[in-house]
Image 1 (cartoon, rainbow, N blue to C red):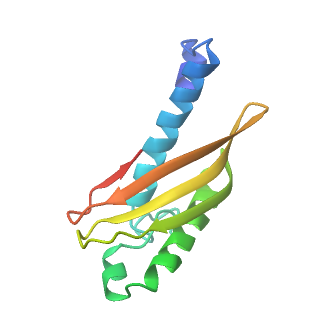
Image 2: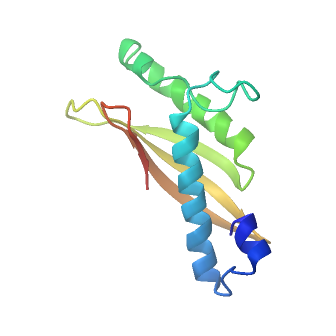
Length: 130
């Protein structure tokens, strides 16, 4: 639930709706975090990740390093997540799309819920998270 929804009193009373809202907020933040090039923000130089185009020059070894970088960013800038793991998804065909699976524990109130996200960046540098 967003801070605005809580202040406005429009927060859902149903835990399932609340969980959907939290997941939607997380997806939006993950897409933002992945789309910001590390070093481009003046106040938080370590927010975001390095451009994935360097992965193609360091393939296949660079994938693990980039996943570690994303893990570090999530640990630092997404306090609702614990035990974050980012794993690359290897494809058998060459489509120039980079995919990762994100596994974590989501803290919602006094509960801990396991979550999983799939993130991908296409050749046009468009991120999507599901």
